[in-house]
Image (cartoon, rainbow over all chains, first blue to last red; front, side):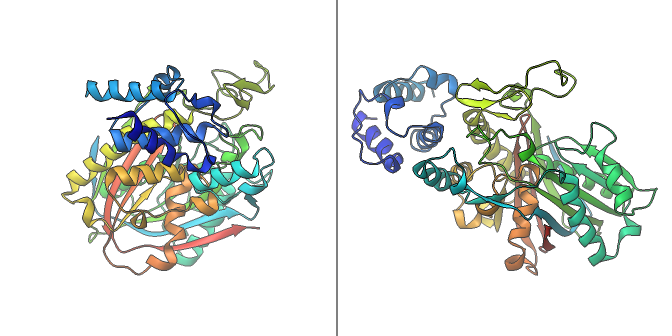
Length: 79
Length: 348
């Protein structure tokens, strides 16, 4: 699992938000148009692609794209 | 819990809907972009909203009245069950009001079941138990909700999501029917994820303020529905595939052999994600959410009605029905039977 591939998957999921370049340091809540629907899209994508189901408690700890990547990696390791 | 039901046939499924159609694009708290994204991801283009004074039982009534007239069985109904979380009164039970209003016999047993999105499958199971025991020959299962009475206009997480509908299903004893296989479950730890806190015994009316409060961006009062979408999403992804797989295992069938999956119409994203997890192509998932929104306990029977024109007359069609939501509560059912007669009635 690599950060670039992870970012590509996120970008595909959020294409409706318009042109927006995601980087590891992008703060999720600061993405223009970000709302609760995007959290569901993100959780669905991660469940499908990485077989990790994230809860609201997990996501409270996440600020940036890199935080999310590290969390998914950690959860994969717990499987 | 896994159970089997024998000798029970669904003869007909009718649905009653309000005339008033409300469009997602007209919701004033959504920007055009938000409305477009909401429709794209939830699938909801419009929904039906019952006006003040029209209850869920009124919608069930018009469906049941038409059904009883078409089948001429009012004098043969032994059991009426009303499944809803929007009854007419705290008491008496709405089923008893409907027994009298529909002109059913005094000997007809009538009671309510308080369940939401899992309620249709639970209702089928309870009716099926009575029928297979031999105590009941014909039953009416009335299922629906007026969810819009409890959503706050200011709450974007609930207001544009829910629609109103009531349904009536006629069930009969039939020695020729193939068995149903049902998996059911409950998890009360999810109680705060979908809840109306105020207005009943725990927090009676008058003991709390009716002002709108900010629940992490969701604006509503204690008398309104509170919904934690991510909790519900996680619950559905955790429980529903497992419940459906158990149902299939009990029936000895494989998912590939199922003609259609009829999931509770929570939102389009949940349907799509569950279908992907279950490896079922979307074209084998029947839906109604596009025109009716999330109709709570009515969503499964309403979905059957929406596809009645194309499926009525199909012999030995295999279906999985799966309801899941408030509680948390879930129930999945496999059946193989001729597709029942359906009809959609609009409340004028």
